Amino acid sequence: MADFYFVLIIIGMFAVTFGIRFCLFAKANKVVMPVWVEGALGFVPISVLSAIIVPMIFMPNGNLTLSLQNPWLIGAGVAFIVGLIKQNQLLTILVGVIAFYLSKLIV
Image (cartoon, rainbow, N blue to C red; front, top):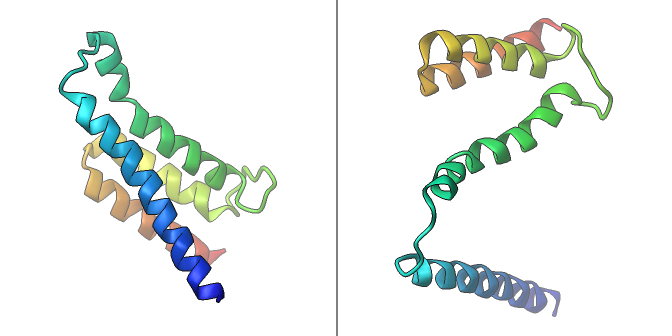
């Protein structure tokens, strides 16, 4: 019986998610947004990812950890520097992940 409820919950989540997105996309061609709103919408993914990643980097154990014992901070720092210099997303992610895992092995 519990499996049936899980299936109902998943179907309900699908219906809500699809319904919201369908309504927004159906009206997308009819709504004209100001230029400044369209420009601001370009920063939404960056803001959301920052809100998710920054606490993980600076507070991996629930406490503020600003030391070289924090592999998350080392990986993020290396990725930040590589991103500034090379401006290549794939290279930045790859080098950041490698730095994270190497610092985890060393520490």
